[in-house]
Image (cartoon, rainbow over the protein chains, first blue to last red):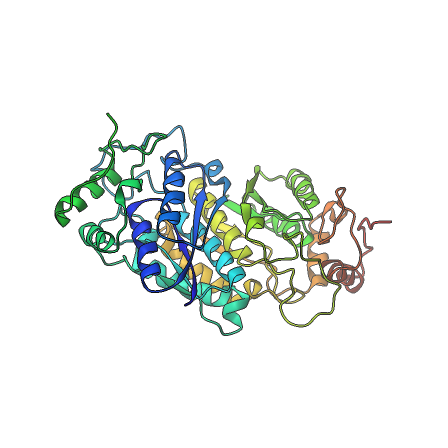
Length: 223
Length: 223
């Protein structure tokens, strides 16, 4: 039974990852980030998910990333767009996964954890550069040189069990492992109670995932 | 004249880096971190240094890293040791440079900056794994895959002009460029006014640097 850090946003992907890590018999330390996101309801969701899926501990680290601006997810002056725009969308938060994985690396080292699990997904994603397999491989190579633990020859593996799954496959896997998707929050415009807008990129991907998986969508939508 | 981000701790190394980047004709955006360090006086020093060396802007990002513990620099239950201990010391903050460079990466992308300057030094350093050239190279490789900017073919270079310099050479270079070392804070046990203990690893390295460079040590020591 190994200790692992699981990055937990409060969305369906990271909830499924936590379920997978737990199912593999790991002692899971869940880590969330209060980084100035507009959809802060995901942090309440993360707390519930961590409890429900038996995480040993759940921490929320504050990062003043919103002060850097540049993303529709953190900058009040940029609206979250309707779906269908080309290229890397304005919901992309510069270097977000790098910052999150880095803090996961720090906690993993303090805990003596063997691995960091992240719900990165390269199939039904939003075109973010830091969700691609080649990015994760490069982060792993950097991590191998970055910490006392790895330099002293102990492993610290970045694991992304969803990276090649479609949204439907994630729904199926989470359902199989008993994830309660009704408490997860994926929407970029979630209200303070976590109800979803139903229209943003994240909502569209999620809704289609349930349809394709043939699983009833338990998402609470805004009236 | 290119925009660049300069990581500025408030110590002598990063002050020298800021002077170098400015001397090269760059528009410097200085970035500091309030990460729960005990020696918070370095943040006041960073503010003064940024102003004195003509940074276009200086931001301080809050990161709740102290909550992760595991380092004498952020954890109240671990004392900053006397110098001379073997191996990687307890002043090592897990994944600190990775976290700092990652946030620098995010800001660089928002600003459209070409480079991130960091005062990493592999010679007279404290044995931290994330100060070595091979670590910086791996971070660069990861950064090339991490951001919208780099994926779209624009450069974002990690520059560490001090990486192969001795502390004495850093003192000489900073002196040549007019850095006022009296306002920089290197000490791990600096008091709230930035006066140095004179005994910790950081103080010893700094003091020896001035001696070896033949430059009068302007450091304010605690009584």
